[in-house]
Image (cartoon, rainbow, N blue to C red; front, side, top):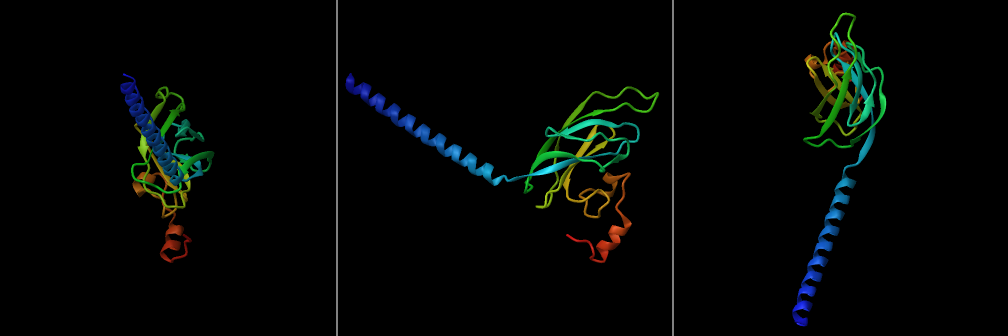
Length: 180
């Protein structure tokens, strides 16, 4: 009987030891993965593409952005959020926002909104987190070192409206005079 107890105790000890080693290995791997996900601070900016509603407040993964009047934005930023130095496929952020009141006589603002959106690829120079608010509770987020009027801003001309790419910057780019 003592022999059976010792065998069970020994096998449990071996099992416990293997389990501890496995957990230590998993922890070490997790530390290595997190070390590879170097992060940098980034300011948070916003653009309101709507003509009739302001954005009273918004956050991107909890980092607050400035309030934005209709068809305005980009001039103010808030600090700070944290983003990976290197983009990776499937990166997403949670955006939460609330609308301000519209012009006198307009219906009351819709309730607060939230959306999880994918971040398009960005360069290793990272930049600022820029949230774009559109009618019908649509939102897009890009990470860019450039302003919305720059030719290298990572959005289509249609998504930029009412902003347009600067004609002068386009000429500089054609002439090779825009720095990287």
